[in-house]
Length: 295
Image (cartoon, rainbow, N blue to C red):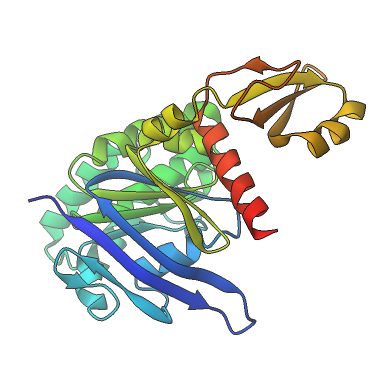
């Protein structure tokens, strides 16, 4: 039977009055699940709460038959976590530090630990550089080491928070391939503000902003529902402000010195061309509609 993570009515307000989570409910199946939202949306608060590092004010989280908020030790036995800021000891080798983490995870037998550490370093393609100090690793190598430590103890739930921020395109692809390979039999939650991470990897996703879930489902379905409602036009910088008053502008980007504008509309606005809806269009229009509703 496949495992499911259920979050029901989760809320958290910080002492300074910021409502980080507002009645968040999600059901997350086995496989890769993308949690997409701008910085400050509440993603890290949600990840830390699931990872038993932070208390919630109200609501519940269950992982199979484990009550996540009450049975923290049980969760930690089956959890792999790669936080956004993953610090490493620069003067320690990958092999030594992973061995240390394995002890903390309860792998007491030295021979078994050696096998586990070697197998994990091979899996994340760091075996050849296992004796090198972590301070000499590139960003992508450090992230792959982070995944190796998250995989210790055969976790059933893996949380990765903003894992590809700062990686070059080649490293990002390698990291994606690694996550996709791992994500077949476990729950992996990928928390990110990078839309391509989710469109490349995830069969389910949720969009979160200001601590609320705005949308949830299959990215491909979300793109299909947007079809025929996204339009583009190239405008000068001077024209942009006027268009923003007239249309539901969901995104603008500079291409070759010109501004390419995407708008959301049920019918074709004059002077605009149709465009195939991408997950980025879904994301920005979802945020745009939420802001309109709140205004």
